[in-house]
Image (cartoon, rainbow, N blue to C red; front, side):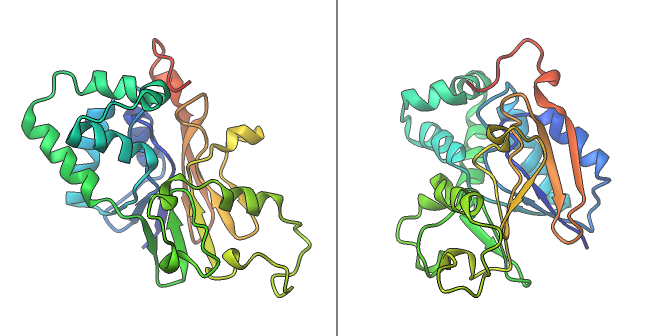
Length: 241
């Protein structure tokens, strides 16, 4: 069984379908989705429908992203967040415009079922954004940190690669797990378009909401598969700002 980790989709369903075909995904694989399923391209409703159906046939773990929470707040409670609309929410709202109540309720249930993190039998942590507690995720006080934090990735990137993990000054947050897989902060900000490793942290958000591809990585072998740049599937759209 392969453990395949999929980065932030941002409603890029066409890219996701291409990616799963390129990786020759089967029902024997375990698929870990790192969150941010919506906000960006026009296929928000279709993307969530696809994921709900995929779980019926495949071993899927769906983590919660910050954009998923924002969309849920709007669907469930009508919360209108201007910043959310500016950062992809407007496209999501348009996608839901002609959606019936049954579909909306099914999606609300999907958002409510999302996990904040997943820890596997190899002590690998999978999370959308990060955590701040020095003792690890079990001690995190604010749930929102799991899908809003950026400091964990910033810490890993800024760390001196020559610093020994046994050094007393080595960041405690990075010592609890054999590996950490996250998304949330696109590596395109570093000028990269493939999953990046810093210390024992892997960032799989390759900028699908902007000009990058959607990526998938095998957590065991580190083999990577990618879609075409997602914007090429939506030539008349602008994606996220």
